[in-house]
Length: 368
Image (cartoon, rainbow, N blue to C red; front, side, top):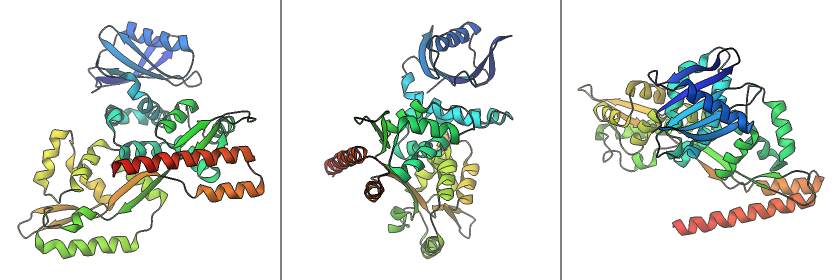
């Protein structure tokens, strides 16, 4: 578990300046801040460095000379600083998007909590954070249309489209490669590396199947079973998937560590408030706030018996995962027909997709 978070900038008049830190009682010396500043100056590039200063294990992310900020994560000595690089890159853009009016200041505790869990996120949470990032969405949506683009063209296009603050294209692409959403490769005759979409993100609400199989065994009194079935049926008769709805759930539920803990419990059990209170041991401080968000997102249904006992049950679950982009075959055929991409690039894309399909199929067979 990280020790704390510091947001620093360099001011030529006052040297290093701490803009905010979390927790408030965190202590870091001016000498250490100067060492961090000097280490970034030595590399001269935006991005993360890691260093040991006395008993401190530090991961520091520099946003570049255009709008220089230093986002400093203090770690325990046994923690791997590199494991936090993607998380630091992620929260740096959140801070920039909310920097001008100081709105980021009240977000720091939440961002620190999200960053602290980053190395241990499961695929569902990791993909949620990936898709919530506006630069990632721009890249993914562009690749959904074209499938492949040169790295140099992508960089120029992103700088034209994204004007909300700092972003490090190479760091972003590296994270998307690690998560097996894109692949970067070279093709003879092309002036720049190519970026291929190899997996898309699939997101949708779905019924809470485990609970519906036997709601009584999962904790729901028998008298409410029919009402539960009707409530779920009514919801999904009207439900139409939208990107806006998906993004809202990813942001307010899946990517929020505390609310995600509530969701995990509700996926396997229909519970009373007393049972939910036990989640405080897992760091869920605001049970009522979490339930309110789930209610506002139409994800839970509440039953109340004659004694006033309340039972909380999932109305709708949510599913997100990587999806092999089979639809890209039609895109490749179209591009070949209109000559919008060179034959060599399209052949390479087919090879990349084939390799990805074979490795995915092999992995699936091994899991079975």
